[in-house]
Image 1 (spheres, rainbow, N blue to C red):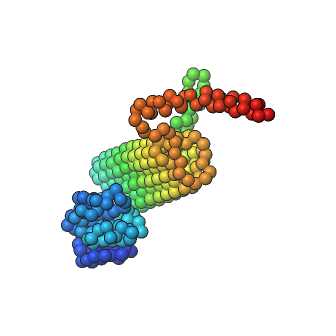
Image 2 (image 1 turned 90 degrees about the vertical axis):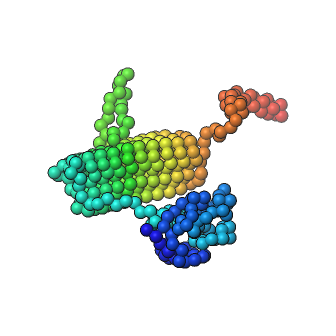
Image 3 (image 1 turned 45 degrees about the vertical axis):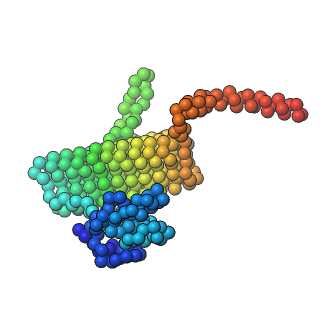
Length: 341
């Protein structure tokens, strides 16, 4: 569907510089965009691509507006404006309401007439599927699960019993919500399974990436707040609580009973130990290892940075000598103090 540039500017409250009658029907990268295409610019790394772009319009900040001679939409946050315009130009496919003949629906399940249930989906006893929901092919909705309005559960996702999902959520393929947490008590050399009696609760506007797992609570619930975004291949253990609008990139792992605040960000492969508390507005760079609670907002990092192999090996070897060096320095300082005294 095409929109006039003036229509996009008005809807998203952007300043327009250029021809308001320009027709826009798709988004694309600066180098790929052409006729009827709109792109965005956010930094100097793409300056050359911006200046040579054939896009019919570009979204950029007022500070960068002179870098492009074509049609421009001026935004305080070009990337977010691009995201909203992309949603308008490329809306997600809306499945037709109704239940496919191959779906298996328990007689006690409550399916809103406005929901769509695809091929071979399974809806178990006492589950409730809200208006506008889409349950993809082969997805499993367990006993007593509730799925809020306009939530999409993609093909082959698994939602175990008792899980509660809010409105407008996205549960991507391969995701598993409400599996047993890793609870076992040691008895001699063996392990005794601890029944996982809690549930999983997702707020509204939550996104769960492909092959991400969110375990049910041992006693209380695992809670994912409103607006939380979890990338692919993330593991959230039992009884974790994640505050509103926190986002995690791929391969993060959050151990059991940790509480994470609002608006936090976790780059790829961050690991967080169990039973910690992380305050609001805490941000972690890639591969950070969090072993203690965080009480002050800020940006945190850990680990050894990438380096040429020969240098990395020397530094790693010297790291193992730090304790010896520390003891030698203490002895020298003590000897110096004794002489001074």
